[in-house]
Figure 1 (cartoon, rainbow, N blue to C red):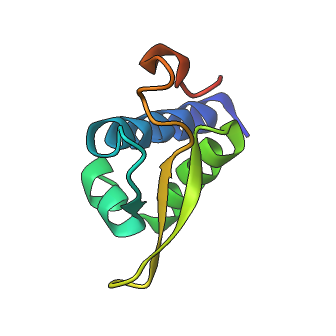
Figure 2: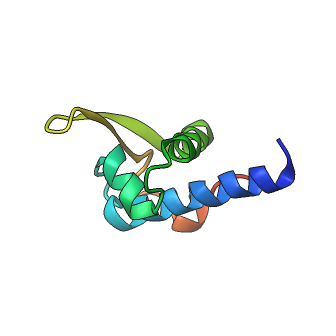
Length: 93
């Protein structure tokens, strides 16, 4: 993967992490559709999936099951912000 593609993926992951910090700092699960809207991905499911995979592999988020009403996956921060400092929850380069 070239440097610009890697930088774009990292930027996407940072945008998602910002959504988690804003709407789920206590470890609350956020459905994929909400993540897409609030992070500004729109209909780009591929970019969203790549950013989620990046955060999962970095250990910053984890799958939270499914939203029972929408039948879609949801994710949460691996550790609520009360347990770690926000500076420690950054996407690795």
